[in-house]
Amino acid sequence: AQKVTQAQTEISVVEKEDVTLDCVYETRDTTYYLFWYKQPPSGELVFLIRRNSFDEQNEISGRYSWNFQKSTSSFNFTITASQVVDSAVYFCALSEETSGSRLTFGEGTQLTVNP
Amino acid sequence: EPEVTQTPSHQVTQMGQEVILRCVPISNHLYFYWYRQILGQKVEFLVSFYNNEISEKSEIFDDQFSVERPDGSNFTLKIRSTKLEDSAMYFCASKGGRRYTGELFFGEGSRLTVL
Image (cartoon, rainbow over all chains, first blue to last red; front, side, top):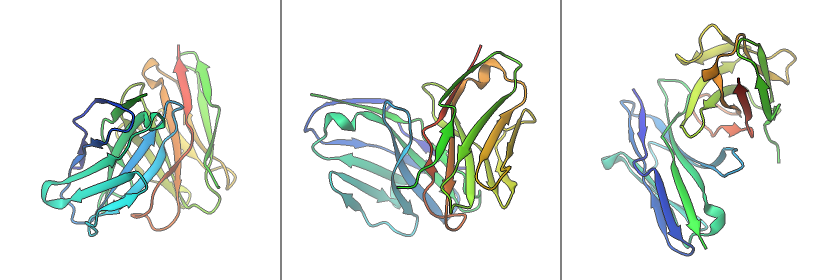
């Protein structure tokens, strides 16, 4: 069975600090996909990144970077030089090939960036 | 940029009433989903739909729920007899491409309040 754990329920930082959101997953599949979504206060879910299990390259997109490590079943997300607009709930999610295309979400991490 | 649209944005209903939530997925997408998020909790999979039939459903998606794609553009979720615990944000999502790959694009959600 697939499972996603985001141990950090809430994180509060001051603007311009770097912050890392942790995500640990469990799966028996060798083929799977990992995602991060952002949910701002307005409530919608905004796609940030997708990673497949065969691609362990880290990725950087502007101030965002992702560290995928299969050895520790982790897919952590770092925001560099955080801004107030980064305040949101961030969800990590997993999709296994054998369980179809359903996404299993973690509990989410509420990030608050204070000015 | 194409987007998933949902109506209504907020619906208040009495317990026992039928509710229909509507979604217009992105036009060239083939896979459609409903997810639910109870306030303050994680996002949970309800059902996926492909080729005019349900491809997967979760244990939450019991006989009170049904989905339909009545006219090739709309994708609806019906709750036959609402219960208090159905109060949640309901997200529609769609996906193009192959079943096991690609990101889901979510709508802005429909908040259902059952009194």
